Length: 446
Image (cartoon, rainbow, N blue to C red; front, side, top):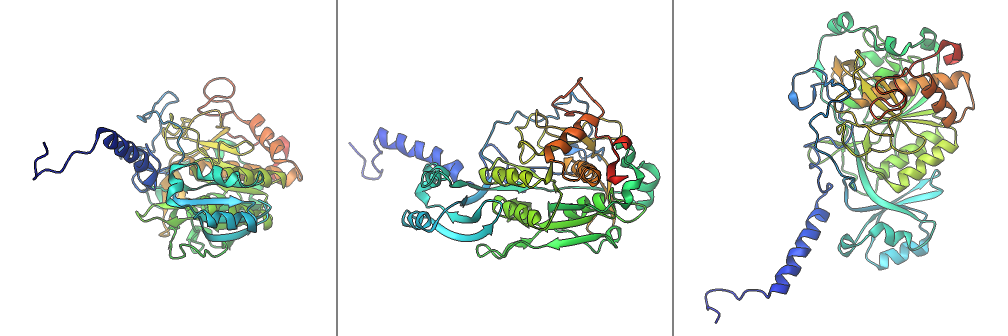
């Protein structure tokens, strides 16, 4: 008998069904990946910190090659993405009309020469959360590319020192890679996808930096601008102009695309929609090498865009990320043809938060580096973000003499010149070893 003051209990089968639905929907409704921290609480990609990780001791976070870094094993996951958003290439008017009939909403559409036409930004219906929405789009036509609108992150902390102390106590990291002095006069064209760059920073006065803007967004056009700290730091390593911060290629022409924005929790993020647009823009503007100091999840449109960038003889370099030594491979560094870069200290020890795996190609200086800070100061920073520009500069220098070389040929040359570190041969910690420039190869056209 049911008491009048107590509602009747649901049948056992109904309770089980509701429990299953709750367990299924909860991770799908979160705007970040299951098993990962919410945006702004843990770096999903290269976090470039200079504080020694979680210890806060300012040591630069150096660990031996056997250091586990305290990270729990991470499983392959979809990566965090914009809630209910998909991106797709190859959709014609008929396919778009059919998707709209099924409840999809076209938020925006941009031309993209790399991907053969245009890329659509779509909002999926709620019922698609319980299915494989990208597969539903691909099923419309065998030529359609579709994936979630994944986020890629790049956040950093720093330990400030005076410019005089930096100049006095830290030998130039250029020495570690035998960087040739004649490259100071070389002027290759380099592409940079990052946060915005503060061209008014003292170390960048006189640098040939061209700021490129992405096509305006019809959807979510009230985004907050990105913080210039990370992009300015990376730009300074490439084209810095002052004695305290002399870039690797101070005469280079830097094409800088600000593809990031500030998220709701103050984190710096870029979505795949803007990333493929940035690649298309840099390819059209004549970049010979593209630096990508960020990391995140695999994405079908990103993979295809990079393949087509490589067909245009453009070299791509990416940070392997700082999610820890047991993290799953991060992208775009883990894609075929992209040179994946880890960070090491002056003592040739790997940065303890750097990712590891078969996708690690080269090691470069990336611990306690002097870098430009957005407030006009010079700080020390650590992370694979800041190692990638060394390999980007090396690839650009190589192309100055070996014009017309394929990205694969440039990569093979740089790997063959590397100084082996760690286990003999290629290993998951240092890759093929420390980047080294060989004067006999006449870098920078010497």
